[in-house]
Image 1 (cartoon, rainbow, N blue to C red):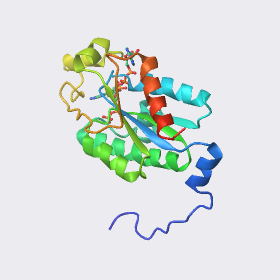
Image 2: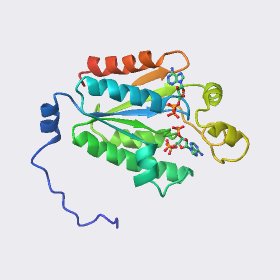
Image 3: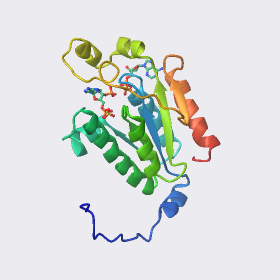
Image 4: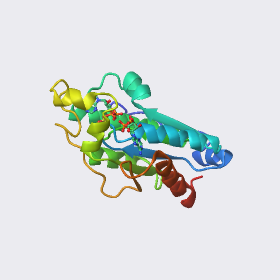
Length: 199
Ligand SMILES: Nc1ncnc2c1ncn2[C@@H]1O[C@H](COP(=O)(O)OS(=O)(=O)O)[C@@H](OP(=O)(O)O)[C@H]1O
Ligand SMILES: Nc1ncnc2c1ncn2[C@@H]1O[C@H](COP(=O)(O)OP(=O)(O)O)[C@@H](O)[C@H]1O
């Protein structure tokens, strides 16, 4: 028996649709996935700022507000990463229900975990953005010096070095941060949102 047996759902009278209507845009998760150093944080921060300036109601979830708070009891074992992504997916789902365009910036290395989040959301509410950047380039950037530590054996199970990253098979959007500027990447995503009627 699960811990949540005997709970009765109490429906709100204000619906997701009503909130979306008031906001004048649809809500969805823009789910960035990619290696450490690929550009998930950089692109999602810039995109959120631009969307905000366009009048879109946004919220960004990333390591600072999740791994230091809600998920501070989780590390980087495969099980903990799966639980990390599961909880983030649940929070993102609530934020979409609240009417927000929600941006998430986590490595989310396992395809199955990402697909589980997709399954949690309604159709078209999960926009997977593969932030493509080769390991060599990520390692050369090494913005936090973590690849150097991983190579020196000071961090075990580092994604791309001695832990897996499963490339998305059919993401809605691919941005290639070795080829595209930051400005081009945010433009590609904004175009997608406009062309598909999100904003
Ligand atoms: N072992 C290991 N592997 C990968 N990354 C590590 C590890 N240890 C710490 N870090 C730092 O944690 C950030 C990744 O956290 P995430 O929550 O995005 O990871 S995951 O989705 O649960 O795999 C990641 O941040 P980003 O560089 O922003 O991706 C790293 O700074
Ligand atoms: N075209 C680009 N798009 C995004 N980031 C880039 C690009 N070129 C270089 N960078 C740099 O790459 C690094 C990406 O780091 P970060 O955004 O923290 O990645 P992640 O969140 O995926 O770990 C930053 O230092 C950023 O300035």
